[in-house]
Length: 421
Picture (spheres, rainbow, N blue to C red):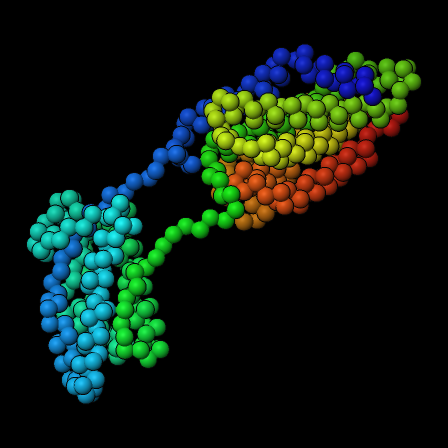
């Protein structure tokens, strides 16, 4: 079989046009796309946001305890002694002070700048665009909120948020304030259900929990993977198209004369395709890494995982080349066969996410794309880049091996018998 493999490799290497398309073109496309979409995803620059909020406090909080006690006695039929106890405990749960503390906390200081103004000045600055939005704390808000917390009734007074027009900034401010109010209402509801008269407001806590390695995935990495896999897939056509030239040169007759088994012709095509696809993807990934720093700071284990996926996908490409070669040998019009092969690979490229990210397609197309060898390889490489979990390679590896076996069987079944080619 060595002579057949050598023949196919030499035919490919002597075609300078194919060499340029296979090796240089992917790198050029990756570089162009990388610079065109620089910073769109996975940028190293931190996203900074400077939100300006005017805070208008119209609530008189000096006589909260007395006003709350009177309201409890007058509207809830609570005796003065119990109402006085509740009102005294209410000093620990002032919602206005909690709101001030939340807006001026360390977590929000980098995002939100709070300006304490009167309503007229705040409205003027909002109108002029100097401030994104204004939050008005109306008179009686504290008493109404505490009364609602102790009795379970809806408050008659609520916060008022005003803005000139809806933008991303003031929408973000609204979400922050709304989140605080939701947390406040939740705590009051829990205390009311538990029958507790003690009120203590806990500031909402936030954070990011990272699962696994959780490395960032960038557009540069996506372009590198997508183009490397796509052009490796096209190699199955490139090798198969050489069959037309060999038919014209009566290669089959030469095989018979040399007393070699005809099936070695197909095996040579598969092995040479496997070698070419493996080398092509390896060269593209390495050049993209050194030129564009696509995979910075990666370990040896990472590259071993990438190499494993490359070899498995190269097997799938080799089996696909076997199918295309068998079809080429049976068809009278080789050019028509090449057109069909290109159409098939283009469809696989679209479904597998090599032209555009697969998530833009409907769900049924996304599920279908996961069954294509290129789509499967792309998805597992993306997952490997982010998490480097060996367990994530098991099922995709078995699927790629299954695809290789299936296409190899089909290629052998379609391979022409004596006198058919």
